[in-house]
Figure 1 (cartoon, rainbow, N blue to C red):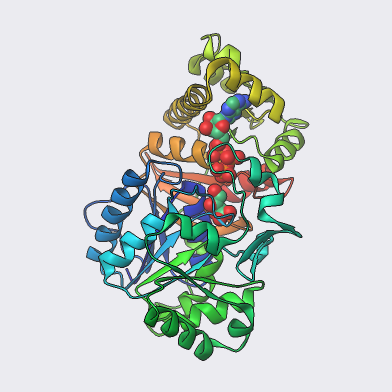
Figure 2 (cartoon, rainbow, N blue to C red):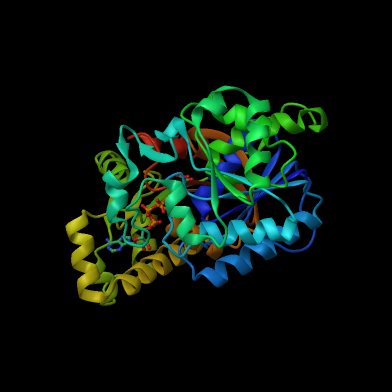
Length: 416
Ligand SMILES: Nc1ncnc2c1ncn2[C@@H]1O[C@H](COP(=O)(O)OP(=O)(O)OP(=O)(O)O)[C@@H](O)[C@H]1O
Ligand SMILES: O=C(O)[C@@H](O)C(=O)CO
């Protein structure tokens, strides 16, 4: 394994794995680590640390980093969200500083930009589409409200050291200029350096400039320029289609309430059997995994969807009534147990909406590693794990995917 990555959530991990696989690296996604990894050129460890207490996030990230180094990795990537989801306490700054210390590294880039998904960094400020980050729905995120679009200022709240900056003019001057700028920031004692990028070509320039850095941090975009640094040692173009073939019944499980998921659920439900899980019914024990599994079995080959996706007012209502953490945990447990039951009774294709929901499901399925296949929509690849034969998954980050994502994902994950 040449390149090792630590992602702070599960859909983020598959977003990054997708970028590395597209760049020609044979890539495996791990949920958990230990022992010797299967043969691959890039390994991505999925953690669930985005909103964990700072100390836990640091400890888990360091443990994952040590394991990746033991597998022979020469460079580590710390992947966080392209909307820089974090609080004034962390977890991006503390994890990045702890990884720098572990690696004995002088400097690392900080770049959440992902132009393909509309996330651009200009003058240290993060935009989503044509809006500053703090003027989007991210301002009201339930766990990590992003109220300041200046990533340098926001990160400085989280770090012990000062934060550096490389602006677009320097990036456009090419890799040599960027290398010199990193060296100048490091010499001034600024170890975390926020770099502007508004287009894929900027990410390629930064990727070339950080070829000899031990640590790289960012959204999945920052990984676009990394595979080519290893080109001479790669085994040839990885054939993403070479993941094991998957055949069998499918299901869509959506626990994401994002705007994109709402549209995707509505479109899919218009032409497939659909079951909305009501929070009150779930909390009061009127809905059971057995009951829903029976309902799914009765749909035959019509590939149903089960979802908790609801409008913001309905989510707020359920949270006020039962408590935010309690509802979230109950839904995650429900989807996890349902996925496990379905996989045990023949389902082979599972398409999931939502990062937390995906984490709960993959853990319940005990898939310690998954091969990364072709991209379904930007940032979402086909994944194939092993559980009594090949089991195909797609883990969709809340805001990712075209409106017809679920239908398309089921088709690409495998055959009925
Ligand atoms: N109807 C609902 N009411 C309250 N909470 C819900 C409801 N449906 C789902 N949830 C909870 O909301 C959370 C949704 O998070 P999840 O990460 O799965 O989706 P997301 O935030 O849209 O995706 P991402 O993290 O990839 O952006 C989960 O913890 C889920 O259990
Ligand atoms: O970077 C992103 O936007 C995604 O990979 C993600 O992390 C969403 O949870």
